[in-house]
Amino acid sequence: MRFKNKLYSLDAPTIDLCLSLFPSARFRSAKSGIKLHAVLDHDGDIPAFARTLTLLGASIVTADRAYIDFAWLYALIQCRNYLATRLKSNIKYRVIERRPVLKSKVGTSDQTNILIGTKAGGRSIPLRRIGYKEPNTGKQYFFLTNNLQLAAKTIADIYKARWKIELFFKWIKQNMKFKTFIGTSRNAVMTRIWIALITMLVLAYMKFLANLGQSITQIQRLLQLNLFKSQSLWPLFDPPPAEHKNEFRHKLLFNFS
Image 1 (spheres, rainbow, N blue to C red):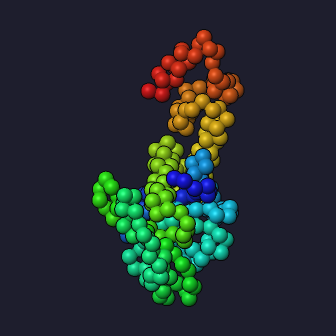
Image 2 (cartoon, one colour):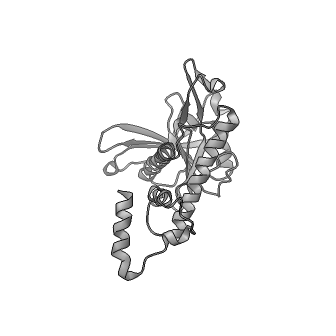
Image 3 (cartoon, rainbow, N blue to C red):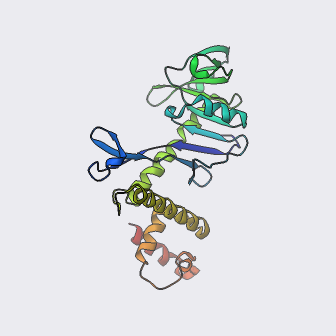
């Protein structure tokens, strides 16, 4: 992808809870759970707090179509930021411009539209509707954005990058033990989630400082192996002497296998 804008992904997966233990979190007749709204900063792939996030000018936010809210979209435009999302089938618009598309780039359409209908709230927001066919599956996708400059293929790639936040939540659920809570109150659940996110941020910061090229999961395992040793953490990440370099790598591979 060729652009210099800051890129954020927004998503809200459901964390399943036991209905008998967490009746206050009921969201279906027989299920209980909470929505974890979070933003992933693609510079480092680290979470940002959604409610207080201040976007830099010309930032791009990619989100699923469930997040389409015209008041929020209008606020983004007023701050000179951009949204890249999927198009809802019930959105009403009027085409005001059609652009040529490069069939070699698997684009199928590129239009500038004006939103109409009651949901538009009387605001004349020019939005871009981009048609894109996935070359591997042949499935057709339609994207909506207020960025009128970037190539249609770039917009499609930006939305595809949203998969990183899905992987982030998958990692959090697998490694931070979201299935185990020390209490059943709202405060206990929120405290457990905050601890998990803080732990992830600390591991990401250590990965940045150590600069060993290991994944966060590998660093987590390395810390677990040395959890009961009375020593500073940083020597664990110091590069070994040249004569012991191969031995050090062998130990890492052995520990992480």
